Image (cartoon, rainbow, N blue to C red):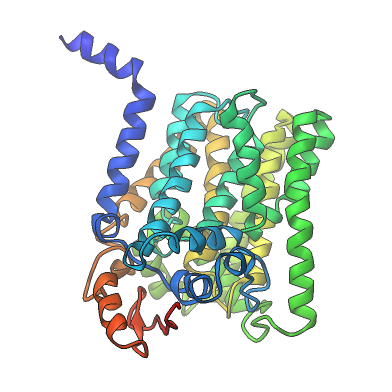
Amino acid sequence: MINNIKKFILKNKIYLTLLLIITLIIYRSPYILINGRFFAEDAQIFFKNTYEKGFIYGLFQIYLETGYLNLWANIVSVFANITPIKYAPFWSIYLSLLLKLFIFFFIFFSKSDFLINYKHKAIASFIILFSPPMVPEIWLNAINGMSYFGIFAIIFLFSNHSKSLFFRFSFMTMFIGSLSSLYVCVLTPVYYFKYYLTKKKVDKNRFYFIFLGTLIQLFIFSYTHINSLQWKDTRFIVSYEKIINFFYNVVSKDFFGRQISKKLYENFISDNSIIFLFIFIFFLTLFFLFLNYQIRIKKDKILLKLVLIFFLESLLVIFGAQGETVYGRYAAVPGISLLFIILRLSQTSSRSINKFFTLSLIFSCLMGLIEFRYMARYPKQLNCINCPDWKEQILIWEKNYNYKILVWDYPLKYFYLKKNN
């Protein structure tokens, strides 16, 4: 009996792991999946514009203040306007869920130079699902699908060529990602670097897909920047405080989670930030010397690409994050890329060092799992705590078209909607 159970588990381990992932997704916020919700600009900007101005406008709209196109949010807003308005938020939830599940299925059912076997694929999936960088702010909403496209761009870079329809569909996913996420566009040099090394047609096609999207985003960014349409007063700020904040949100929280990192910050870093900076730079230098050794001696091109990815994504959020903080959604993709570096080191290092990196990943995932739902910093982004019910809001609005419709993250987020004639 026991042997039969073991054989069943081994034979179906991929499907059982995917079932576990889906179960954890449901566990994190059953309310959202059952009742739906609109989150911030999903309703305030994208749904509102599509509802009031039509599908064509909605598909090509640009939120000019951000300085880039978010095609994914546009696509979701178009679908959200197909069904009766009371069901509109479910499109944002379930299309975002579909994107997330697509990444997990791609990891398990595609071949990869980086995620070679089941163990590596499972660890990578758990990192993406519940490691500390995956904060509630980016959970199941369209506007922050850009973070998941950025993560997929990392996974897709290392995938091997396949003639399957699943793999071919991934090219379109990448193109949509480049038109939705600067986290994807910033990886264009790495995609070219891979093509330069391999000279393979599939890598050339990958580069072309991401390069075309990046050119379009660059044009939009230049136009909005030159015409002073962006939030210039809150972006492109690089300061000492922002660097410290980057180390706290991306590096420290990656491995220790929010609870421990917060205590370290309050008891040591906040009053001794200069000392902390020197200590951190010292250990960071040792770490990168070790990375340099791994890359040069072992000629590990995968590790080199992961380091370049972390460097590029970090520069993007340091320069692009609003204000003087690199918090929440901004820390997600750099944080995941750093954990992927640790995963690679656990694959290639000597046995004694391998244990250290493996334990680091286990501890990181454990901290993330603890904060996955109940100990999250903003639990009301996952659970209904005095939250506005969309259907109730729409019933009130249908009686009074001047009503202020409340959406998550309440009470700060709301919008007015003109009646659609």
